[in-house]
Image (cartoon, rainbow, N blue to C red; front, side, top):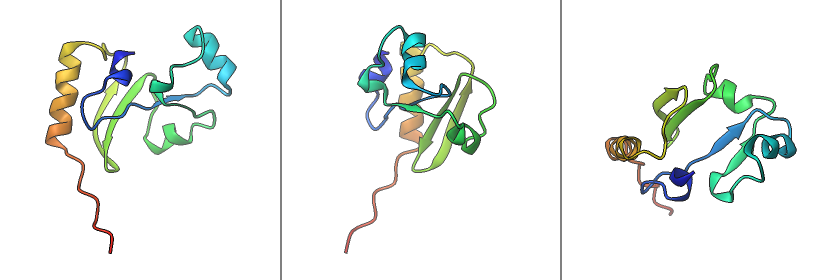
Amino acid sequence: MALAKHPPEELQVLLFSHDADMPAVETFLGGPPDPALHLRLDAGKRAAHAFGVDTLPTSILVVDGRLVARFQGPREWDSRAMRRLLEKLTEEHPARDPAPVH
């Protein structure tokens, strides 16, 4: 997945799987997941419930804890058009500067 390996600046891709264990994920993927995918298991669906996910696949763009965009259904994530859209969304909704440490 090129998007995970070379995301637009300021974007990190995380994947959540409802599978109960990594062997099930590896069977689905045809091997171990690439570390660039930042795969997390969500067998209890806590993350899915927190973000109101009821359709798979669902993709969510979150900036500083703010839901910026939601995509339901499959997408061509590695396409130029999708990359431009993600770049536009991250520019329109920049991360806030961290608070200064005193």
